[in-house]
Image 1 (cartoon, one colour):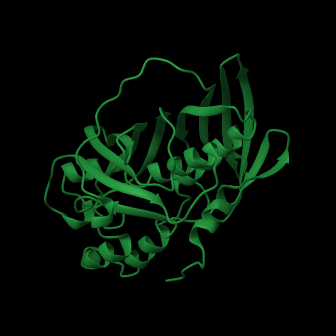
Image 2: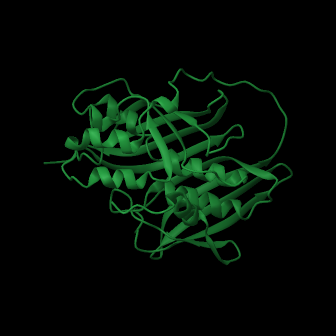
Length: 294
């Protein structure tokens, strides 16, 4: 396993786009566990591009996106931002990510000035203290026999070096063949402190949000996932609403469930809470989830 001396710094570099023209940015790309760019990376980079064109006093409050084509990890990604609207309270941006002359991802994001208003939220569900749960490096080797490729464990650990992500219950690949309730919880935070930039924390949460959201779909059918090889698929669309301030370098509870799977697609929905119980983010994603043929 090739461990970086500072995986979080590497991730921050990945999200720090190069501006090549007004409203045009370029980002590096890298492969994930499958031979394409990780969807969370593209979504986070696109949100960075949008945020770079918005006044600093306007924070992101929502994004809606579509994954159009698989990204090539060997080529940079160009992000073009359209300044759709600059209103008194809200700012809207549209971003298209392009590789090899073709769009691979489309994002619409909205930003808002700070405003006081009515307050209520769904209560935080029960969850154990994250410090009592095993880290990825502790948990993943226990399930090494589930993977036909022995390098998968090291690759999974390497992919999560920048983020401390801890499952409350066994992940899908831990209970292959045993259908369970379509619910999953993970705690996560970055492995190191981040700067006091609200956009950075929002983009980091966007990156992580694509890691486990469809797990609950797999749990309902006793499937282990893409690393096991008993399903194939990819993200189709991804939406997030940012309700309250949070820090991605402090523990966040990702409470996920799947209300439906049909037509070769699975839907995941989730709420992300701060450790003190504030509802920070709502996430919804649909993805292709298919049983391999043959």
